[in-house]
Amino acid sequence: MLQVNNVSLKFGKRTLFEDVNLKFTNGNCYGLIGANGSGKSTFLKILSGEIDTTTGDVSMTKGERLSILKQDHYQYDDMRVLDVVIMGNEKLYKIIEEKNELYSHTEFSDEDGMRLANLEAEFMDLDGWNAESDAATLLNNLGVEQNFHDALMKEIPVKDRVKVLLAGALFGNPDILLLDEPTNSLDIAAIKWLEEFLINFKNTVIVVSHDRHFLNNVCTHIADIDYGKIKLYIGNYDFWYESSELLQKQMRDSNKKKEEKMKELQAFIARFSANASKSRQATSRKKMLEKIELDEIVPSSRKYPFIDFKIEKPVGKEILKVTSLTKEVDGKKILNKVSFTILKGDKVAFLAEDDFVKTTLFNILSGKDRDYKGMVEWGKTIEYGYLPQDNTEYFKTSKNIMEWIGQFYDIKDETILRGFLGRMLFSGEDVFKKVNVLSGGEKARCMLSKMMLESPNFLILDEPTNHLDLESITSLNKGMERFGGELVFTSRDYELNSTVANRIIDIQSDGSIIDRRKTYEEYMETKN
Picture 1: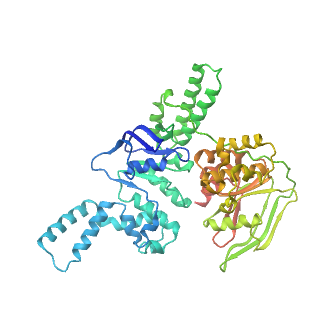
Picture 2: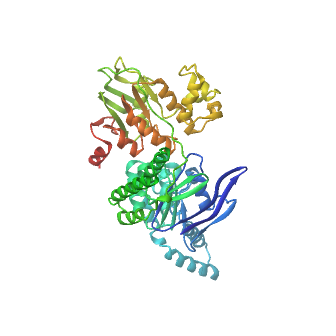
């Protein structure tokens, strides 16, 4: 068990947390959520002991081991992959190092012999003889090829280095597992395996993630950072979100009687509890939900940007036709005679193992890349908006947000523009921030603002959830669902793919495509 006692953290005059009291217990997975800058990663560092608290303390049951997902794979460049995984159990790794050092002695003293005997006993207690095979199993399950296991970290692909660090965090059955964005850079198969691992994990997990589908699958509780406090809610992310939304709706409706509000919320809890019975954690989760008292649920102070793509110009019969599109990079055809036609009503999710391939295709569609063979024919009525994955070139300026938006869309009335930016969470003095110093999330909201003001009738979105917090991702998801035109997009967000796409185009390793008019879930079922 991990216990947080009266913890506060202050940076100068700013209070990040105040009087936080929590218990994290075995058998549960806690999803830590909060707006960007609320302190999610900082709180994990407090739990791990990396950051000291201003007041209060964190205590752990004696003898338990805590493991945390490390973020910097470069510090292990000269280490063997298997060793990096085993190092996840620091005590075992130190025993192995000391054993190897003693065995390297040309002469043994009695003291060396006694020490080795003790080390061998501890090594056996920690199941050291199976350490390499257990580490290899974790790497295999995460999709790290066997021939990389004995390589140095700097010799393997970057995407696999992230998996090695994750394997290290999971290694050796830790009692408490802290995971900060564990699904970042993972492929679909690795995410699915991690979900299964955490669902069956019998100890304590605390996880930060922007992946709503992941949080819904693995979490038994949500720990919500709000108002400088952290409050626990039973259930997964959807339950927390829907109950919070319902209460906010009720609070806005001042004419409702309290009894009616209570009945509506009780009916909601009963319905959600019934749905939860279908999950892996069926029995325990249902029992927990049944114990919820209405006054435990309070509305969130969190703000959601208003993302809505309006169309000014109607679409004609012809939209987009791609014929025998071929693109070669470094002598390899990454797109090989690709042909497809976008029809009315299409919302297409593009899949590929290599992100570069998808981005290359979208650069071609948007006209940014003209070095290809084949035909890309847009309908005469089409005005497309492009949201690139890398938006760096748009922010190499000292303009403030108001001036930056103004260069793309001429709005004479400053009040109207400020009102629009306010809905995108740029309020008050925020609109005078220089765009070249904005955070990744703020730049992403600027790009979405630009696209909304342009009112295109076709959207090209390359990883649009990058850098966005959960609130912005949720709003973007709804905006893409509501959009009345056609769109093509790429995303690692399972929920976004599942709720928006009605067609899947999967780019294969040989540059060809599989084109299916199916939902994302239907396609993934056939693929697996």
